[in-house]
Image (cartoon, rainbow, N blue to C red; front, side, top):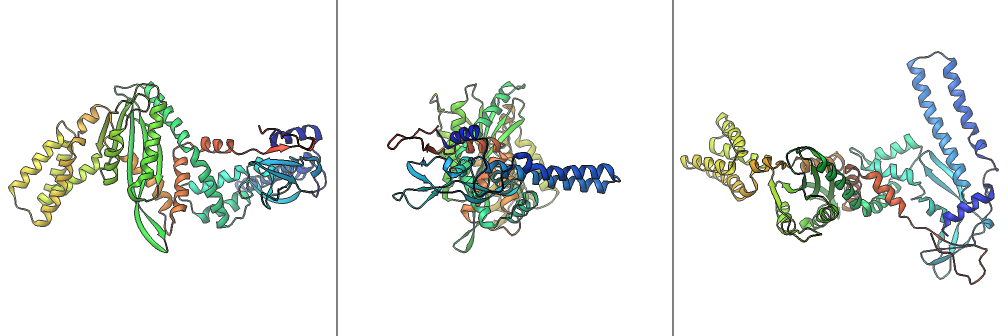
Length: 506
Protein backbone atom coordinates (compact mmCIF):
# COMPACT_ATOMS: atom_id res chain seq x y z
CA UNK A 1 0.00 0.00 0.00
CA UNK A 2 1.09 3.61 -0.52
CA UNK A 3 2.45 5.79 2.26
CA UNK A 4 -0.76 7.84 2.31
CA UNK A 5 -2.86 4.69 2.79
CA UNK A 6 -0.59 3.64 5.64
CA UNK A 7 -1.05 7.01 7.29
CA UNK A 8 -4.83 6.73 6.98
CA UNK A 9 -4.69 3.35 8.72
CA UNK A 10 -2.41 4.73 11.43
CA UNK A 11 -4.63 7.74 12.11
CA UNK A 12 -7.77 5.59 12.24
CA UNK A 13 -6.31 3.29 14.89
CA UNK A 14 -3.99 5.51 16.91
CA UNK A 15 -6.22 8.30 18.19
CA UNK A 16 -3.89 10.92 16.71
CA UNK A 17 -1.04 10.69 19.23
CA UNK A 18 1.40 13.55 19.43
CA UNK A 19 4.85 13.27 17.86
CA UNK A 20 8.21 13.34 19.58
CA UNK A 21 10.06 16.64 20.03
CA UNK A 22 6.87 18.60 19.30
CA UNK A 23 4.91 21.00 21.46
CA UNK A 24 2.98 19.49 24.40
CA UNK A 25 0.19 17.17 23.40
CA UNK A 26 -3.09 18.95 22.72
CA UNK A 27 -6.26 18.41 20.76
CA UNK A 28 -7.59 20.62 18.01
CA UNK A 29 -9.77 22.65 20.36
CA UNK A 30 -6.75 23.50 22.49
CA UNK A 31 -4.78 24.55 19.42
CA UNK A 32 -7.54 26.83 18.11
CA UNK A 33 -8.81 28.08 21.47
CA UNK A 34 -6.62 31.20 21.78
CA UNK A 35 -7.49 32.29 18.24
CA UNK A 36 -11.21 31.83 18.78
CA UNK A 37 -10.99 33.81 22.02
CA UNK A 38 -9.37 36.72 20.20
CA UNK A 39 -12.09 36.63 17.52
CA UNK A 40 -14.81 36.68 20.18
CA UNK A 41 -13.13 39.68 21.77
CA UNK A 42 -13.12 41.52 18.45
CA UNK A 43 -16.82 40.80 17.94
CA UNK A 44 -17.80 41.99 21.39
CA UNK A 45 -15.68 45.11 21.02
CA UNK A 46 -17.55 46.04 17.86
CA UNK A 47 -20.98 45.26 19.29
CA UNK A 48 -20.43 47.26 22.47
CA UNK A 49 -18.62 50.23 20.95
CA UNK A 50 -19.57 53.26 18.91
CA UNK A 51 -20.05 52.38 15.26
CA UNK A 52 -18.44 54.33 12.44
CA UNK A 53 -16.99 53.53 9.01
CA UNK A 54 -13.48 53.72 10.46
CA UNK A 55 -14.30 51.29 13.28
CA UNK A 56 -15.97 48.80 10.90
CA UNK A 57 -13.03 48.92 8.49
CA UNK A 58 -10.57 48.30 11.31
CA UNK A 59 -12.73 45.42 12.59
CA UNK A 60 -12.63 43.63 9.25
CA UNK A 61 -8.87 44.09 8.89
CA UNK A 62 -8.21 42.69 12.36
CA UNK A 63 -10.70 39.87 11.79
CA UNK A 64 -8.99 38.88 8.55
CA UNK A 65 -5.65 38.79 10.35
CA UNK A 66 -7.04 36.66 13.16
CA UNK A 67 -8.69 34.26 10.69
CA UNK A 68 -5.31 33.85 9.04
CA UNK A 69 -3.71 33.07 12.40
CA UNK A 70 -6.51 30.60 13.09
CA UNK A 71 -5.88 28.91 9.74
CA UNK A 72 -2.15 28.74 10.51
CA UNK A 73 -2.85 27.09 13.87
CA UNK A 74 -5.19 24.52 12.28
CA UNK A 75 -2.66 23.78 9.52
CA UNK A 76 0.19 23.34 11.98
CA UNK A 77 -1.84 21.03 14.22
CA UNK A 78 -3.10 18.96 11.27
CA UNK A 79 0.26 18.49 9.57
CA UNK A 80 1.93 17.62 12.89
CA UNK A 81 -0.61 14.85 13.49
CA UNK A 82 -0.53 13.19 10.07
CA UNK A 83 2.29 10.74 10.74
CA UNK A 84 1.17 9.60 14.15
CA UNK A 85 3.40 9.72 17.21
CA UNK A 86 6.82 8.20 17.80
CA UNK A 87 9.11 7.31 14.93
CA UNK A 88 9.04 3.65 15.91
CA UNK A 89 5.31 3.50 15.13
CA UNK A 90 5.97 4.26 11.45
CA UNK A 91 7.14 1.84 8.73
CA UNK A 92 10.78 0.82 9.15
CA UNK A 93 11.40 0.81 5.38
CA UNK A 94 9.97 2.47 2.30
CA UNK A 95 10.68 2.05 -1.40
CA UNK A 96 10.69 4.95 -3.80
CA UNK A 97 11.60 4.83 -7.51
CA UNK A 98 12.99 1.33 -7.04
CA UNK A 99 15.37 2.21 -4.18
CA UNK A 100 15.05 1.18 -0.51
CA UNK A 101 15.10 3.69 2.36
CA UNK A 102 15.43 2.97 6.10
CA UNK A 103 13.73 4.94 8.84
CA UNK A 104 15.73 7.49 10.83
CA UNK A 105 15.70 7.23 14.62
CA UNK A 106 13.61 10.35 15.20
CA UNK A 107 11.67 13.03 13.41
CA UNK A 108 13.17 16.34 12.32
CA UNK A 109 11.68 19.81 12.25
CA UNK A 110 10.81 21.74 9.10
CA UNK A 111 9.37 25.18 8.44
CA UNK A 112 6.56 24.98 5.89
CA UNK A 113 5.02 27.91 4.01
CA UNK A 114 1.22 27.76 3.80
CA UNK A 115 -1.58 30.08 2.68
CA UNK A 116 -1.82 31.19 6.32
CA UNK A 117 1.87 31.79 6.93
CA UNK A 118 4.77 29.65 8.08
CA UNK A 119 4.23 26.71 10.42
CA UNK A 120 6.64 24.41 12.22
CA UNK A 121 6.10 20.68 11.83
CA UNK A 122 7.96 17.45 12.44
CA UNK A 123 8.29 14.77 9.76
CA UNK A 124 9.82 11.35 9.56
CA UNK A 125 12.84 10.86 7.34
CA UNK A 126 14.22 7.74 5.63
CA UNK A 127 17.84 7.40 4.55
CA UNK A 128 18.78 5.72 1.29
CA UNK A 129 20.93 2.61 1.22
CA UNK A 130 24.67 3.12 0.86
CA UNK A 131 24.53 1.83 -2.71
CA UNK A 132 22.05 4.55 -3.62
CA UNK A 133 23.76 7.46 -1.93
CA UNK A 134 23.48 9.63 1.17
CA UNK A 135 19.96 10.90 0.44
CA UNK A 136 17.10 11.38 2.89
CA UNK A 137 13.51 10.90 1.76
CA UNK A 138 10.56 12.44 3.60
CA UNK A 139 7.51 10.50 2.37
CA UNK A 140 4.95 12.81 3.96
CA UNK A 141 6.49 15.80 2.18
CA UNK A 142 5.99 14.01 -1.12
CA UNK A 143 2.47 12.94 -0.20
CA UNK A 144 1.57 16.55 0.61
CA UNK A 145 3.23 17.79 -2.59
CA UNK A 146 5.58 20.31 -0.96
CA UNK A 147 7.69 22.39 -3.35
CA UNK A 148 10.65 24.23 -1.84
CA UNK A 149 8.98 23.83 1.55
CA UNK A 150 5.66 25.31 0.38
CA UNK A 151 2.24 23.63 0.26
CA UNK A 152 0.45 23.07 -3.09
CA UNK A 153 -2.16 25.76 -2.36
CA UNK A 154 0.50 28.42 -1.76
CA UNK A 155 2.59 27.24 -4.69
CA UNK A 156 -0.43 27.68 -6.96
CA UNK A 157 -0.99 31.20 -5.68
CA UNK A 158 2.65 32.10 -6.29
CA UNK A 159 2.56 30.82 -9.87
CA UNK A 160 -0.74 32.58 -10.57
CA UNK A 161 0.57 35.84 -9.12
CA UNK A 162 3.56 35.60 -11.46
CA UNK A 163 1.33 34.93 -14.46
CA UNK A 164 -1.01 37.89 -13.96
CA UNK A 165 -0.86 41.07 -16.03
CA UNK A 166 1.43 43.76 -14.66
CA UNK A 167 3.14 41.42 -12.21
CA UNK A 168 6.78 41.75 -11.24
CA UNK A 169 8.98 39.73 -8.90
CA UNK A 170 9.00 42.62 -6.44
CA UNK A 171 5.20 42.86 -6.46
CA UNK A 172 4.77 39.11 -6.00
CA UNK A 173 7.16 39.02 -3.03
CA UNK A 174 5.38 42.00 -1.47
CA UNK A 175 2.02 40.30 -2.02
CA UNK A 176 3.27 37.16 -0.29
CA UNK A 177 4.32 39.20 2.72
CA UNK A 178 1.10 41.21 2.79
CA UNK A 179 -1.48 38.47 2.15
CA UNK A 180 0.23 35.36 3.50
CA UNK A 181 2.88 36.53 5.95
CA UNK A 182 5.59 34.79 3.89
CA UNK A 183 9.03 36.32 3.32
CA UNK A 184 10.85 34.78 0.36
CA UNK A 185 13.79 35.82 -1.75
CA UNK A 186 13.99 36.13 -5.52
CA UNK A 187 15.87 32.83 -5.87
CA UNK A 188 13.16 30.80 -4.12
CA UNK A 189 10.42 32.60 -6.03
CA UNK A 190 12.07 31.69 -9.33
CA UNK A 191 12.62 28.07 -8.29
CA UNK A 192 8.96 27.61 -7.37
CA UNK A 193 7.73 29.36 -10.52
CA UNK A 194 9.98 27.29 -12.80
CA UNK A 195 8.91 24.04 -11.11
CA UNK A 196 5.19 24.81 -11.46
CA UNK A 197 5.53 25.94 -15.08
CA UNK A 198 7.39 22.78 -16.08
CA UNK A 199 4.88 20.56 -14.25
CA UNK A 200 1.79 22.28 -15.66
CA UNK A 201 3.05 22.45 -19.24
CA UNK A 202 2.67 18.71 -19.64
CA UNK A 203 -1.08 18.97 -19.03
CA UNK A 204 -1.74 22.20 -20.96
CA UNK A 205 -2.64 20.75 -24.34
CA UNK A 206 -5.16 18.22 -23.03
CA UNK A 207 -6.98 20.93 -21.05
CA UNK A 208 -6.96 23.33 -24.00
CA UNK A 209 -8.36 20.64 -26.29
CA UNK A 210 -11.19 19.98 -23.84
CA UNK A 211 -11.91 23.69 -23.71
CA UNK A 212 -12.06 24.05 -27.49
CA UNK A 213 -14.30 20.98 -27.81
CA UNK A 214 -16.67 22.50 -25.28
CA UNK A 215 -16.89 25.69 -27.38
CA UNK A 216 -17.42 23.65 -30.55
CA UNK A 217 -20.38 21.91 -28.95
CA UNK A 218 -21.83 25.29 -27.97
CA UNK A 219 -21.24 26.61 -31.50
CA UNK A 220 -22.92 23.58 -33.07
CA UNK A 221 -25.98 24.11 -30.86
CA UNK A 222 -26.14 27.86 -31.52
CA UNK A 223 -28.59 29.57 -33.84
CA UNK A 224 -27.56 31.33 -37.01
CA UNK A 225 -27.14 30.98 -40.75
CA UNK A 226 -23.47 29.96 -40.84
CA UNK A 227 -21.47 26.89 -39.98
CA UNK A 228 -19.33 27.21 -36.84
CA UNK A 229 -15.77 28.34 -37.51
CA UNK A 230 -12.53 27.08 -36.01
CA UNK A 231 -10.01 29.86 -36.52
CA UNK A 232 -6.23 29.54 -36.32
CA UNK A 233 -4.12 32.65 -35.85
CA UNK A 234 -0.44 33.35 -35.61
CA UNK A 235 1.59 36.51 -35.15
CA UNK A 236 4.96 37.75 -33.97
CA UNK A 237 6.17 40.42 -31.55
CA UNK A 238 9.64 41.76 -30.88
CA UNK A 239 11.02 40.67 -27.50
CA UNK A 240 14.29 41.75 -25.92
CA UNK A 241 16.43 38.97 -24.40
CA UNK A 242 19.72 38.95 -22.53
CA UNK A 243 22.23 36.59 -24.12
CA UNK A 244 25.85 36.51 -22.94
CA UNK A 245 25.56 39.93 -21.39
CA UNK A 246 24.05 41.59 -24.45
CA UNK A 247 20.48 42.62 -25.23
CA UNK A 248 19.15 41.29 -28.50
CA UNK A 249 15.73 41.86 -30.01
CA UNK A 250 14.13 39.00 -31.92
CA UNK A 251 10.60 38.02 -32.93
CA UNK A 252 8.69 35.86 -30.45
CA UNK A 253 5.53 34.06 -31.55
CA UNK A 254 1.92 33.96 -30.41
CA UNK A 255 -0.65 31.44 -31.60
CA UNK A 256 -4.41 31.24 -31.12
CA UNK A 257 -7.20 28.73 -31.67
CA UNK A 258 -10.62 30.37 -31.65
CA UNK A 259 -14.20 29.10 -32.00
CA UNK A 260 -16.97 31.20 -33.58
CA UNK A 261 -20.66 30.29 -33.40
CA UNK A 262 -23.24 30.35 -36.21
CA UNK A 263 -23.68 34.10 -35.88
CA UNK A 264 -19.98 34.77 -36.09
CA UNK A 265 -19.60 35.54 -32.40
CA UNK A 266 -16.35 34.50 -30.72
CA UNK A 267 -17.00 31.93 -28.01
CA UNK A 268 -13.45 31.65 -26.75
CA UNK A 269 -9.75 31.43 -27.53
CA UNK A 270 -6.85 29.33 -26.28
CA UNK A 271 -3.32 30.65 -26.59
CA UNK A 272 0.25 29.54 -27.24
CA UNK A 273 3.40 31.65 -26.88
CA UNK A 274 7.09 30.90 -27.36
CA UNK A 275 10.27 32.91 -27.11
CA UNK A 276 12.28 33.76 -30.26
CA UNK A 277 13.92 30.97 -32.25
CA UNK A 278 14.95 30.55 -35.89
CA UNK A 279 11.95 29.49 -37.96
CA UNK A 280 9.66 29.38 -34.91
CA UNK A 281 9.63 25.57 -35.11
CA UNK A 282 8.35 25.10 -31.54
CA UNK A 283 5.28 27.21 -32.22
CA UNK A 284 4.56 25.32 -35.45
CA UNK A 285 4.88 21.97 -33.68
CA UNK A 286 2.58 22.78 -30.78
CA UNK A 287 0.01 24.76 -32.75
CA UNK A 288 -0.34 21.91 -35.24
CA UNK A 289 -0.47 19.38 -32.40
CA UNK A 290 -3.22 21.30 -30.64
CA UNK A 291 -5.28 21.64 -33.82
CA UNK A 292 -4.78 17.99 -34.79
CA UNK A 293 -5.90 16.72 -31.39
CA UNK A 294 -9.04 18.88 -31.51
CA UNK A 295 -9.95 17.48 -34.93
CA UNK A 296 -9.17 13.94 -33.79
CA UNK A 297 -11.54 14.16 -30.86
CA UNK A 298 -14.31 16.19 -32.51
CA UNK A 299 -17.06 13.84 -33.65
CA UNK A 300 -19.53 16.39 -34.98
CA UNK A 301 -19.75 18.07 -38.35
CA UNK A 302 -16.44 19.61 -39.31
CA UNK A 303 -16.50 23.39 -38.76
CA UNK A 304 -15.15 25.78 -41.36
CA UNK A 305 -11.41 26.14 -40.96
CA UNK A 306 -10.00 29.65 -41.20
CA UNK A 307 -6.40 30.83 -40.95
CA UNK A 308 -6.36 34.58 -40.29
CA UNK A 309 -2.96 36.33 -40.28
CA UNK A 310 -1.08 39.38 -41.47
CA UNK A 311 0.80 37.33 -44.11
CA UNK A 312 4.28 37.78 -42.64
CA UNK A 313 7.12 35.42 -43.54
CA UNK A 314 6.63 32.96 -40.67
CA UNK A 315 2.85 33.07 -40.98
CA UNK A 316 2.99 32.40 -44.72
CA UNK A 317 5.54 29.61 -44.32
CA UNK A 318 3.39 27.90 -41.69
CA UNK A 319 0.39 27.82 -44.01
CA UNK A 320 2.32 26.50 -47.00
CA UNK A 321 4.34 23.88 -45.10
CA UNK A 322 1.83 22.78 -42.47
CA UNK A 323 -1.81 23.78 -42.78
CA UNK A 324 -2.17 23.40 -46.53
CA UNK A 325 -0.85 19.83 -46.34
CA UNK A 326 -2.69 18.84 -43.19
CA UNK A 327 -5.12 15.93 -43.40
CA UNK A 328 -7.89 14.96 -41.07
CA UNK A 329 -6.31 12.81 -38.32
CA UNK A 330 -9.15 10.24 -38.43
CA UNK A 331 -10.33 10.13 -42.02
CA UNK A 332 -7.13 11.08 -43.82
CA UNK A 333 -9.00 13.52 -46.07
CA UNK A 334 -7.32 16.77 -47.04
CA UNK A 335 -8.70 19.68 -45.07
CA UNK A 336 -10.14 22.74 -46.79
CA UNK A 337 -8.71 25.96 -45.41
CA UNK A 338 -9.72 29.58 -45.93
CA UNK A 339 -6.58 31.65 -45.59
CA UNK A 340 -7.70 35.19 -44.77
CA UNK A 341 -5.14 37.97 -44.94
CA UNK A 342 -6.09 40.46 -42.25
CA UNK A 343 -8.31 43.22 -43.64
CA UNK A 344 -6.67 45.94 -41.58
CA UNK A 345 -3.17 45.08 -42.80
CA UNK A 346 -4.52 45.21 -46.35
CA UNK A 347 -6.08 48.59 -45.59
CA UNK A 348 -2.69 49.95 -44.53
CA UNK A 349 -1.45 49.30 -48.07
CA UNK A 350 -4.35 51.32 -49.44
CA UNK A 351 -3.26 54.32 -47.39
CA UNK A 352 0.34 53.84 -48.50
CA UNK A 353 -0.75 53.88 -52.16
CA UNK A 354 -2.98 56.89 -51.54
CA UNK A 355 -0.11 58.90 -50.07
CA UNK A 356 2.14 57.88 -52.98
CA UNK A 357 -0.46 58.84 -55.59
CA UNK A 358 -1.82 62.07 -54.10
CA UNK A 359 0.48 63.06 -51.29
CA UNK A 360 -0.86 63.62 -47.80
CA UNK A 361 -4.15 65.48 -47.98
CA UNK A 362 -7.93 65.28 -48.53
CA UNK A 363 -7.68 63.53 -51.92
CA UNK A 364 -5.55 60.73 -50.46
CA UNK A 365 -7.90 60.24 -47.50
CA UNK A 366 -10.99 60.25 -49.72
CA UNK A 367 -9.56 57.70 -52.16
CA UNK A 368 -8.25 55.40 -49.39
CA UNK A 369 -11.60 55.33 -47.59
CA UNK A 370 -13.43 54.64 -50.82
CA UNK A 371 -11.05 51.76 -51.59
CA UNK A 372 -11.53 50.34 -48.09
CA UNK A 373 -15.26 50.07 -48.77
CA UNK A 374 -14.65 48.71 -52.25
CA UNK A 375 -12.31 46.03 -50.90
CA UNK A 376 -15.26 44.48 -49.05
CA UNK A 377 -17.39 44.15 -52.20
CA UNK A 378 -17.44 41.31 -54.78
CA UNK A 379 -14.15 41.22 -56.75
CA UNK A 380 -13.07 44.03 -54.47
CA UNK A 381 -9.32 43.53 -54.63
CA UNK A 382 -9.32 43.46 -58.45
CA UNK A 383 -11.32 46.68 -58.59
CA UNK A 384 -8.98 48.34 -56.10
CA UNK A 385 -5.90 47.29 -58.06
CA UNK A 386 -7.48 48.48 -61.32
CA UNK A 387 -8.21 51.90 -59.81
CA UNK A 388 -4.72 52.21 -58.37
CA UNK A 389 -3.10 51.15 -61.64
CA UNK A 390 -5.15 53.64 -63.65
CA UNK A 391 -4.21 56.51 -61.34
CA UNK A 392 -0.57 55.47 -61.47
CA UNK A 393 -0.53 55.58 -65.26
CA UNK A 394 -1.88 59.14 -65.37
CA UNK A 395 0.88 60.83 -63.43
CA UNK A 396 4.60 60.64 -62.86
CA UNK A 397 5.79 59.74 -59.33
CA UNK A 398 9.11 60.42 -57.71
CA UNK A 399 11.42 57.44 -57.20
CA UNK A 400 10.60 57.27 -53.49
CA UNK A 401 6.85 57.44 -54.01
CA UNK A 402 7.02 54.95 -56.85
CA UNK A 403 8.88 52.45 -54.67
CA UNK A 404 6.29 52.86 -51.89
CA UNK A 405 3.45 52.45 -54.36
CA UNK A 406 4.91 49.29 -55.89
CA UNK A 407 5.53 47.61 -52.52
CA UNK A 408 1.94 48.23 -51.42
CA UNK A 409 0.50 47.30 -54.83
CA UNK A 410 2.51 44.06 -55.00
CA UNK A 411 1.44 43.13 -51.46
CA UNK A 412 -2.22 43.20 -52.51
CA UNK A 413 -1.64 41.71 -55.96
CA UNK A 414 0.38 38.72 -54.75
CA UNK A 415 -2.17 37.92 -52.03
CA UNK A 416 -5.38 38.64 -53.92
CA UNK A 417 -6.56 35.01 -53.55
CA UNK A 418 -6.66 35.59 -49.79
CA UNK A 419 -8.41 38.97 -49.91
CA UNK A 420 -11.89 37.75 -50.92
CA UNK A 421 -13.58 39.55 -48.06
CA UNK A 422 -17.05 39.55 -49.60
CA UNK A 423 -16.97 35.75 -49.78
CA UNK A 424 -15.54 35.42 -46.29
CA UNK A 425 -18.24 37.58 -44.78
CA UNK A 426 -20.93 35.67 -46.66
CA UNK A 427 -19.60 32.43 -45.14
CA UNK A 428 -19.41 33.88 -41.63
CA UNK A 429 -15.59 33.88 -41.48
CA UNK A 430 -13.60 36.48 -39.54
CA UNK A 431 -11.73 38.92 -41.76
CA UNK A 432 -9.53 40.50 -39.09
CA UNK A 433 -6.71 39.01 -37.03
CA UNK A 434 -7.65 41.12 -34.01
CA UNK A 435 -7.79 38.06 -31.75
CA UNK A 436 -4.16 37.19 -32.47
CA UNK A 437 -3.06 40.84 -32.46
CA UNK A 438 -4.65 41.16 -29.02
CA UNK A 439 -2.85 37.99 -27.92
CA UNK A 440 0.48 39.69 -28.53
CA UNK A 441 -0.65 42.53 -26.29
CA UNK A 442 -2.21 40.47 -23.51
CA UNK A 443 0.32 37.63 -23.44
CA UNK A 444 3.51 39.62 -23.99
CA UNK A 445 3.13 43.39 -23.61
CA UNK A 446 1.06 43.39 -20.41
CA UNK A 447 3.53 41.11 -18.62
CA UNK A 448 6.93 40.81 -20.29
CA UNK A 449 7.38 44.31 -21.71
CA UNK A 450 6.82 46.49 -18.66
CA UNK A 451 9.20 49.32 -17.81
CA UNK A 452 12.68 48.17 -16.81
CA UNK A 453 12.09 44.46 -17.39
CA UNK A 454 14.98 42.33 -18.67
CA UNK A 455 14.62 38.68 -19.57
CA UNK A 456 16.67 35.61 -20.23
CA UNK A 457 15.11 33.12 -22.59
CA UNK A 458 14.37 30.43 -19.97
CA UNK A 459 12.80 32.90 -17.55
CA UNK A 460 10.65 34.47 -20.25
CA UNK A 461 9.39 31.07 -21.41
CA UNK A 462 8.51 30.12 -17.82
CA UNK A 463 6.20 33.12 -17.53
CA UNK A 464 4.76 32.55 -21.02
CA UNK A 465 3.92 28.94 -20.15
CA UNK A 466 1.99 30.02 -17.07
CA UNK A 467 0.41 32.96 -18.83
CA UNK A 468 -1.13 31.05 -21.74
CA UNK A 469 -2.62 28.54 -19.29
CA UNK A 470 -4.16 31.38 -17.30
CA UNK A 471 -5.48 33.31 -20.32
CA UNK A 472 -6.89 30.15 -21.93
CA UNK A 473 -9.15 29.69 -18.91
CA UNK A 474 -7.80 26.23 -18.06
CA UNK A 475 -5.66 27.04 -15.02
CA UNK A 476 -7.74 25.17 -12.42
CA UNK A 477 -8.04 22.07 -14.61
CA UNK A 478 -4.33 21.98 -15.45
CA UNK A 479 -3.17 22.48 -11.88
CA UNK A 480 -5.57 19.86 -10.53
CA UNK A 481 -4.26 17.36 -13.10
CA UNK A 482 -0.70 18.26 -12.18
CA UNK A 483 -1.34 17.46 -8.52
CA UNK A 484 -3.19 14.25 -9.42
CA UNK A 485 -0.16 12.78 -11.22
CA UNK A 486 2.36 13.07 -8.36
CA UNK A 487 4.41 9.98 -7.45
CA UNK A 488 3.41 7.78 -4.53
CA UNK A 489 5.77 6.03 -2.10
CA UNK A 490 5.79 2.27 -1.73
CA UNK A 491 5.76 1.10 1.90
CA UNK A 492 7.34 -1.98 3.48
CA UNK A 493 6.00 -2.18 7.03
CA UNK A 494 7.91 -3.56 9.99
CA UNK A 495 5.38 -6.39 10.32
CA UNK A 496 6.73 -8.04 7.15
CA UNK A 497 9.26 -10.78 7.79
CA UNK A 498 12.75 -10.59 6.40
CA UNK A 499 12.82 -11.45 2.74
CA UNK A 500 9.13 -10.89 2.18
CA UNK A 501 8.06 -9.02 -0.90
CA UNK A 502 6.92 -5.42 -0.35
CA UNK A 503 3.32 -4.42 -0.71
CA UNK A 504 2.67 -2.83 -4.11
CA UNK A 505 2.00 0.88 -4.35
CA UNK A 506 -1.60 1.93 -4.90
